Image: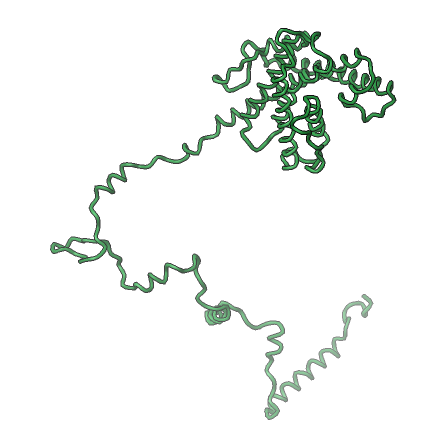
Length: 379
């Protein structure tokens, strides 16, 4: 979903039905969006849906579509769809990111509460939904522990009961959705339309039975009520976590230690030390700070120097120093063989010794052939 895939917005002077149809198409595209909910493309889509639904909300109020003293039986079939505007707007509020999350959740909670209150006033809430809403209550106590627990609400410590209630709501929502799909299929098959004509506006334009259209609108309203109750529960849990996190996180001002005013006062009372002038007084008292060195240039050069110690000699100089200290062993191996003393040609006595030595070695090899004493060289 990109900004180029958004359906064109209707003119501001269009009817309530046109604006609501456009807003509901935007809400349907949320579910099929390939983008991340935090991406700019998705958020621009959310902003467009929020603006369109806000316009529909203002039109419903200005046109006085609903009266406070009427029930659902008195509402026209074509006007039932506008009851869910607050719920759709609350869902859009929960999808917006980038701002104050707690404020967004609070706005969504109030919109869901307004939607359920209108449904209760129209007497279109079921017995289970009305009971749950009465137990939950409309007002929340945020001053005690920061959790969204209603006054006189149900105790949520019983995990088994919460699990059974959740399963029951899921089954009821699944059954309601199945009934809506069955009515859609029945109306579209009667008019020989394809599966794309599943939008309520398209179906209302078809020549269908008034009873089927009203039943479809009431089922859609009931499904929205069930989703709103689940959304309120999720909002309460998220608000509780955010408030707990905010309470456990120290504020930036608390991390900064207060200034030590005593040292500031002492510094203000202390006399200024002259930077120049005589070093010692007449009685030998030190009048100003001084440095015990006369190498001013060395101190000045040490300001802009490396943070580590630099080498004082090269590798060759270090190896030569180590050899002079006797830390290297030399001789042995091929070096020793290559270092064998050669006999001078003029040294007759040395040549005779080498000859006698070679002759004795030859006689030893003749007397001791290879394999001697090893079973006649047979292994």
